[in-house]
Amino acid sequence: MRIEEYAMIGDLHTAALVGRNGSIDWLCWPDFGSAACFASLLGTGNNGFWKLAPANQDHQIERRYLPHTLILETTHKLKDGSSVQVVDFMPVRASHSHVVRIVRGLKGSVAMRGALALRFDYGQMVPWVTRTGRGIRAEAGPDAVELQTDAPLRGEDFTTISEFTITEGETISFVLTYGSYGDYREYSVGDPLDTKLSFDQTSVFWKEWSAKGKYKGPYAEVVERSLITLKALTFEPTGGIVASPTTSLPEDLGGIRNWDYRYCWLRDTTFTLLAFMNSGYYEEARDWMRWLRRTVAGGPDQIQIMYGISGERRLAEWEIEALPGYENSRPVRIGNAASEQLQLDTYGEVLDAFFWASSRLEKNNLADDFALLRKLVEHLEKIWDQPDRGIWEVRGEPKHFTNSKVMAWVAFDRAIKIAKKNDFDAPLARWKSTRETIHKQVCEKAFNQQLDSFVQHYDGDQLDASLLLMPMVGFLPTEDPRIHGTVAAIEKHLMQDGLVMRYDHRKSEDGLAGSEGKFLACSFWMVSNLKMIGRDKDARKLFEHLLSLCNDTGLLSEEYDSKQNRMVGNFPQAFSHIALLSAASYLAEEGEQRHATNSANDWPR
Image (cartoon, one colour):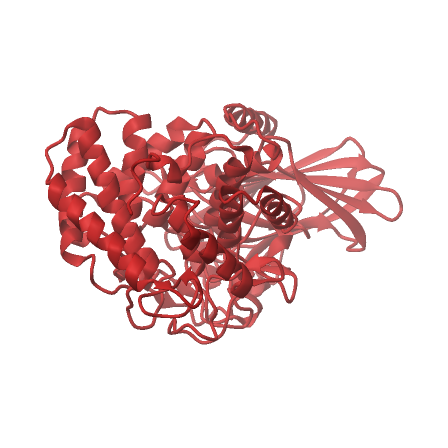
């Protein structure tokens, strides 16, 4: 299926992708960073799936999330007038992790067919399956899963088949549970799950969480769905938020730009904090800050751009040869070598996050926080003038990327503001001098007079969508003609089919073959910029166009292929939804924006 034909369910530890055809084709268990037990998304049915749908494939399908929840409801309407509904959800985890599928007969009688093929270790390991009192147990190495149901089950070609007829008013449930081992190595999936009670509890959880939202603008429904998506990508034990629950969904169909996004990027921190705080979710913002504090602690020269969900640092990249990849897009990568890159913008994102949190969240640890921040800034003083691999994590040669220098400026700017506001001891004169030096250097070396625009890297002539962040982080005021020129240049040269490219792959050297789709976050940044420079009508028109690209459940991937009119890249993508939330906030003219950090008299000249 196309990427947009999937929806997501999750339990705040992991998430599964459910297709319109009723097949769960991706699930890493027991958490986001675990190996997948359903991996047909990146291979074939032999790599694991769980399909539950009418036996007659010729029928209409309608699906939606139940309002204000992450409970997926798929309705199948057959030509004879009969219909059936499948409800999929994962209860917010207490002790064990469950995938619950409830089949409800709506009208007439419908022949149903279920097929469960568990394949542990990213679709490579066929488990040993045995019968239990109410279903089956599948075990292989450290993994063990049980299926419990009252429906009939039989084995066929290493797959568990269930065939039954559901009639109007009848309900049949399936519960798949990931097990754990006790002190005596006894396998356990806990007590049998009451599916009705679990459904009610899951519904109440999500509805109560959604009700905390404070957004009152014109895009309330899509804002709520994006917030629920971010919440679902949160690893509840630590507060870390993964960029996506998937790996290696290609940016270029059939190409090699396939990356593992099941990690937490520091770059996302400020946008995430603002998204949650603007919408009234202070607890999630606090949890994210706690994760950030704990993760960046240590030597300032050891800071990474990304970490595992619990703060893991070793994210070694390797390839699974046995998986052919989504639509034969090889390689399938596990881990991410970009974690070892120097990306200077990370320091600015961390300082910006602490700046916002210091004035809006708890202040108990602020003095200790600043001691850590000071070490980071002092280290940045030594390295800010080095070339790096930039926000897009290029695999080519390091360059003096403009965005990296701008975010280094942000780091010093926010450190100065935090120290002044709280009367912390800091070398303010030295930091101010460095801030001025960076600002002057960027304006001199990164602005191209012929293009009337800032450019991707020093002394170059290539544009880059990350330049749209310059007014959003307060580097220059929105009325500055250089900002207007940059927006106009990106609009002219990097927009295709109404969407914004990160940069032009035909002209920029990023060390990789092939191309990619339009990066959706960049397009939302353009919405924010258009609004900021007073082009309200154009901003709203672009925003509406972007919303039309959401799938039928309101989810977005990383990129969009405007030539083939389909989503590409990992799915769903946190960064896309974060940028959507930011743009919606700008359009609603509510909430606090990053560019508001400078007063009218405080703009660097």
